[in-house]
Image (cartoon, rainbow, N blue to C red; front, side, top):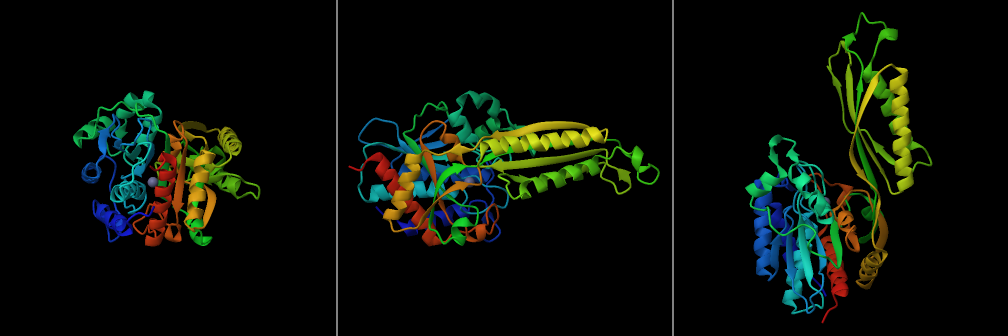
Length: 409
Ligand SMILES: [Zn+2]
């Protein structure tokens, strides 16, 4: 079956105007007014498409199209929230292509054996509330619900996930985890350059890299830059720079299997003529190889401990995120790859460098992802762009994978 290309493009355009940022971007932060507006529109469109709509306790929106049999639905979806000054496609494509699949099934009077679910997950991006991939995380781990509802906003500690869900009217009553799923598919933009550079239409995503985030604080002693001899200094800034260099080199070794990034650093007191008392920095460590990920964390921690010990400093360390690599279900990956080939598209089996809702859902049912090319590999940016042909291709691959999983009648 083929989806309706123009309707999909129009819908992407329409949602792109909710929280529009500059000419082409979108800023629709989770649980904001803009998020509410987009959710309200999706709810209306789900109802118009004949779906039974439920909201669960973490605010995930779930629309179900009945099948001939009363069995767990085949699910698809992604997220409508964005980062600050984000793009039109990250997240929205997976939700709106899912809606398009349902609208096309309706247009073509196709019934399916199993039901189909369309899901919009709460707070995938995690820019205002931690953790990211929140809705899918709680769907897979309902025991975390109460703790996560208390999570405070970075920009206002009085705002919590729970009270902001209530404020926008999306704190639902469906128990998280009560909906059993047959399987899950997420269409998403690649957010990297590989498909475009290799002139490939579709990525059949086999796995998601593991991600470790750690926050460090090296503690020294503030002192005068002119009167304190070097040998008497406890310079947290100098120690941090040595560590940063090690972390950068670690990923640049020829046999390296990890990516390392020190994306933030700050000193206190942060003055030109004062030896830094404290250096705060973060480590983003990623790998497709779980052993390499764990080893990398161990090696870097050992180095930091050695530097701090030798300089007579002290260290605080906070583990922010620990996600092991996730391997998708090979039968669903094959469904995507075979379906793309049947449509005459070129396809590459590949890992995902970024985290996605599908990796969380993979804990409760067979799951996989479909990638389409990102122009110049740009995302989390108002310039994020995917060609209309690629959007259409991705939605068609999604439609056919869903149909073969649900059994067409
Ligand atoms: Zn996304």
